[in-house]
Length: 86
Length: 462
Image 1 (cartoon, rainbow over the protein chains, first blue to last red):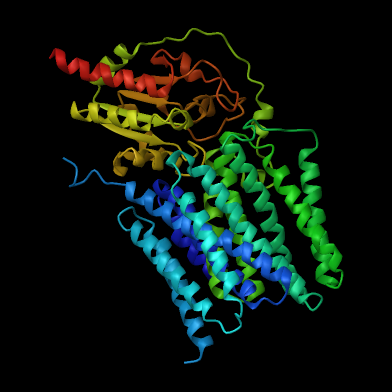
Image 2 (cartoon, rainbow over the protein chains, first blue to last red):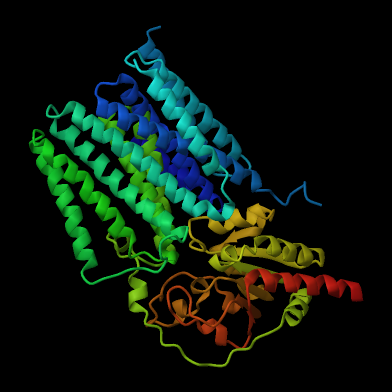
């Protein structure tokens, strides 16, 4: 509940300008679910758990890598018209 | 220090870093720190997890991580115009991960599951699986593999709600009687079908709302997974994602003047059904690129209103040239961006930033509307419904009440549009018949290119 509240307060202040990066960043952070998948695949308690866990790691890792990459690419594009521009 | 304590500490630091990450994202100047904080937090959490003593099979973990990177890198390098479908796809992946973990947890633990645990586990897999198929459908529609046109049939909402109710009922039964293991697959399959049904009636213009909503579901299912695994880190990350999706959904539905419940209960696409568009044949004034260039060159203040049409025509770089040409002549050029312009929240901003337009020139609806009466030219590029004055004046219009960009208050309005065909919502736009409106027919990229040529040609004459 506290997390949701903090999240609410923090995110409300993100300007509409950055809504797309916001979405891709929260997506990457959400992929922290990978820790659950790692434990599942690593513990290898059953065949099913190991297989599903591994697929889950693949899905989450691709979100982490892809999500951070694209967020950074997008943010690099946002430039101010301030001092740098003639 | 025991390994468990060490892992807990890495998780705690990661949690703090995640929150900071979003805090820094609130301004474009600090936003990139946000990405770094997120990356460090992620690396810490994964590193800590790998130390967990219960892990005996590092081979599978390594295979998973490597394959994930192989898929993830190309997904991080897609064209900026493909960002909406990439986002939808990543919601699908996130939801897939959560659903698979939930499923495994169920089979590992059943039937020794407490009602509370079963309830959150059900929430995890129901939200996860409906988000998975729903997001795949959305990605397919955005990539134009599937028809963009909404597909509707009678009793759609009834069928959808029925399916959802059934899934929840199964969840309730399982919470009471976790030994009914064979009910579990149904609790996955029904939401999988529900996800498809939920997105089928959605058309392109409703995509920003739907993507936000699916984002929220993906986050909530991850938070539920956090409760199942008793991981505070996951609860926090899921809650952050869930609330950001929720906030965006609320902003989007407000920007389309729909109540949030209307959106939640699959009320998407109803505007289209209501709008059987009575097309009037009224005269419009059209103009050539030459005339448009002359008017723009004489203006003091120009507001450019981009829409999905600009993205389709890939016109953002030409728009940048126009921006440069006009700015050089001393014209004050800003961009007015409606919250639902494009196919996902913030879509237009990213495209224009890609074209190197400084972000302080990208203004939101309220900022632009305040200045509209002092604006000489409002140039509408591939936007339609978000500029329709009927939303303000015509109570019978299906979009009545929707906040719009008041371009009709500018002295001159120029609209770049492929044809007189009605916009996505199928509603006629009275803007086009106003006295001060000039229509520039053609592909957005070509028309803007021609105007730029005229402007630079004009320089040569002086």
